[in-house]
Image (tube, rainbow, N blue to C red):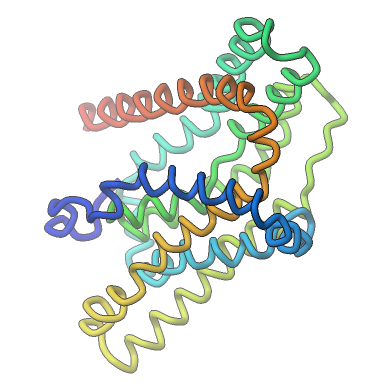
Length: 289
């Protein structure tokens, strides 16, 4: 991925980014404690759902990705067609490699290696969850990681839009094939609502904000003052989102700690495998240019 501002990108990450693993770990602990000590809070928030989409989580995701959307220079979006290699890497890995490698790794560990520790029925459910995870890239978090690493906002938008479009057509066939179930039901209302909530609304808000404020105050003020003021919104939204998600799932985690650890093993292996494959594929494409 290209960098929006090369000099700034080389200055290194800030304190929050450098210690992101620490903040995430603390958010997990706080979320679980919140779910146990004040269960009324996650129970009340869990009632606000539309088509299986949590509205409180949607609002927090808006906070996470709004600074990214407000940073996008839409005149630069058309320029990404001159840089097709990143799109090739992303689409190839997300739709030709990742779902199938996730299935193979998860099946091997959950159904074979961990068979003495996990009942077969539960193992099948965990495998189904791993398949769903492998076939559905988390587009909202792509914006967050790109923002934290000072990635190219316009290029990130195009990548996310392309993968969302592919997901609408490829997600169900891939999941049906891997699960071996011909009558699987895909919640299309959930998919459509998620795209609107997590992409369209913050995108429109970011576009209108950028256009209005630049017209009133100029580009210098917008980039150097406004964007710096709203910068902390992304990490704050990320941490609160994690706290809320783990508050929702605290009982499940505490009741099945061994299963959580066992499930994490194939997921971690898959993550590192995909990371290094993306890296090698990107380097291979660069070497051929």
